[in-house]
Figure 1 (cartoon, rainbow, N blue to C red):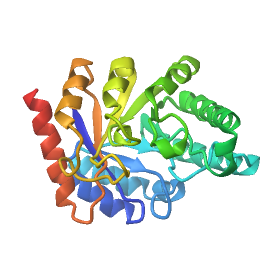
Figure 2: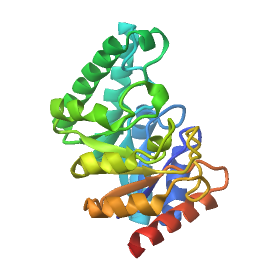
Figure 3: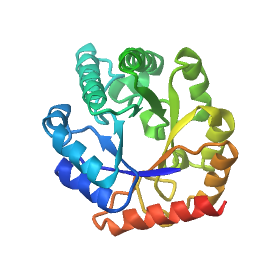
Length: 264
């Protein structure tokens, strides 16, 4: 297993990347959001990013923009959201990124009253982004969302999407799968789509909010989920999405997950 961490896009990108390398992570998952990690700023710092990668033997993955609206009822908002995704995709490819995570779409506003239409727009957007990622040789991993996104939070929703877009993989977000009441849905995702998992996000919570807590600070049974991942023969990339002011908790989380994985 390779272990990574995300930059916090509010902070300077080079500082964030260097800190992740210094903590001994295998790669940085580059979150391509404003104000500090827009495609333009990333490309302007390409040489420095490469230097940090070389210094720490640090790999790199991408996370396409989070706060864009590819399922919105406004065509103009969908259009500009697609443009931002494509711009980030192209910038990542120029950095040598070969695997990127996509949030397949938040459904907000009146879209919640017209779910079929909004989901259709979201899938049209995925198709456009996938077409460009295929041209660039980038694997696109669709992330399971939290229930408030009203789209692709439940395992059953993914079957038709994977049938429509067989080139895509699943980015299993263990924290998101713990939201919405009931048991953690990671087990069902692994059971149904273990062969399609291309990436994993790990963070803890108490089942109510997407807190991004350190591993062990919430209620998620990571040992059980890691065992199921190993049984599904997954052994690729796992990003610790732990967002705390004290980055010691990020390193502790990596060490805990790594110890669990190696003990299985």
